[in-house]
Amino acid sequence: LAQVALGAARLLPSARYAPLRLRLIRVLNALSAATGHFVPVAPLLLELLGFSELNKAPMSSKTRPPDFSLVLRVAKQELRSPAVQEVIVEGALQLLAEHLNQWAYSPGFPELAHIPCRDLRRFCKATQVTRFRKAARSVVDASERNSDWISRKRDNVDFAPKDAERVRLFLSTEREGKKAPMEKLAAQLLEKERQRAAAHAATDVKITSGRGSDGTSDDDEDDEDEYEEDAANVDGEEDFDEEENGGDDEDDDDDDEEFEGMDDEDVLAALASRAGAAGGTGGGLQIRPKLPPKRNKADDGDDDVVEDLVFSDDEEDEKPKKKKKKRF
Image 1: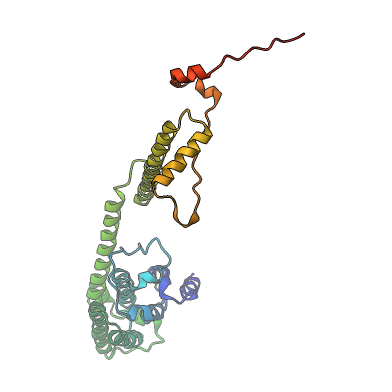
Image 2: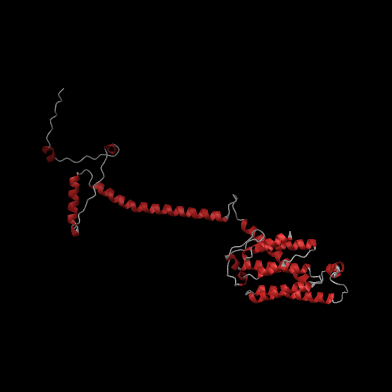
């Protein structure tokens, strides 16, 4: 099981998969504490801290970091977020302190802590964030004090490393009393990690409590609002077009009323005289007057019919037409 977890953690060596790696290392630490067997998780954590994305200065961002217990990777742009970098770096240091604390009473602790302390000093020089540098130095200081304490204790023993039983009982009294220098720092980092997780969970509850009763999220509501605004804008444009076209229709109606009841020849003559009174058209352009729309007989019955005025002179000119008799 430990080999599978170690292989999965190294499968994707990228800072984007830090949530997956941190989760697997947390499982490996729990497995090591339950079985008492050593699992080399320190190289995985030191490799994670050595990625170049975490050594760059973070960019200001108001986005909340994702819940690392629910995701396997983060987006590339989120790696520059201060909140995401804080979760990765402090989470890696907390797991490293937990791993070192598990073997804080072992006679081989000075050799075990040598490589992590060296790489953490290198990380302190590379990082540009002050709080990350301070947190890494605290782990280095606790490891060095624990190494000195173990070195003084093992100088007084009279057994060899091959005596497994006596090695297992080494500093058993101090183990029960939790007197190792690494104990205090590991407890502090663990409590800080729990507080961060509780604060993140409380923030999630506060944000998600604003959802509607139908279960729709805020994003869905925003999409609906945008859709309604677009529909309102389209209706407004249609109304505006209708208003603009309405003026033209009114002008056309006025022309229709003016030429109503006149023959086509009379209409053309009226339009030509109007153009001549206005000074004509320059450049030899010809005006094609707009004729009024033809009226259907079917529509004549619906509208009120206004008869033309007939003068007395017109009556004299009119002659009665003779009706032709039909022959059978």
